[in-house]
Image (cartoon, rainbow, N blue to C red; front, side, top):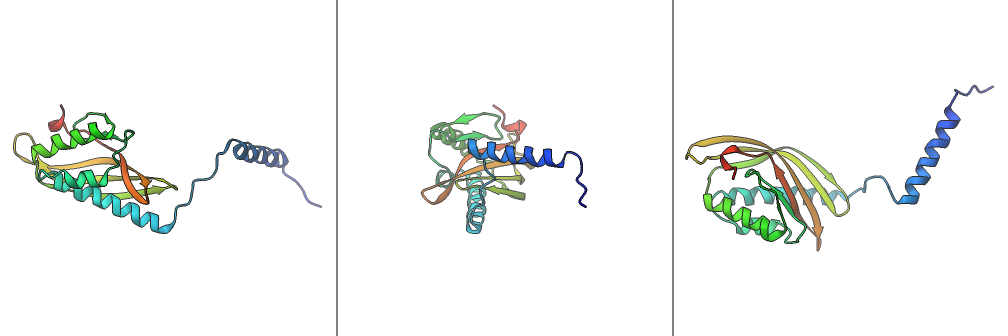
Length: 169
């Protein structure tokens, strides 16, 4: 003789009803991206940090190469500004490049979440650059990078970091 626990049947019915409701409205489990997409997203993230380091020397070209040039991109960088659209984002990067802060940052503690066409990379940007007084200063910022697959390539569509007081406008 099988003894059923009270409420198990009710829980099963509720779970089944929720599954049907989610299926009806189109909600599903997170999309599983191919393994090669993770490698491609990590490569795009590495290219972004190489571009930041080039920007510290005054070079903007690598930044232009890693970003999507769409009107929906967003940038909330260490200056504290919130830019939307590629032209505004590029202008912000050009302003930072003009400062030629020098130094270098590298991503550490990288965490990646990948869907079919979107990927999120959370990490710390750790390193050093020169502040407004010309002194070398260590930095460690929290960062979130968002990539979208465009024409088979992962392009950055969003970047958000902590604010650096000496870059605040």
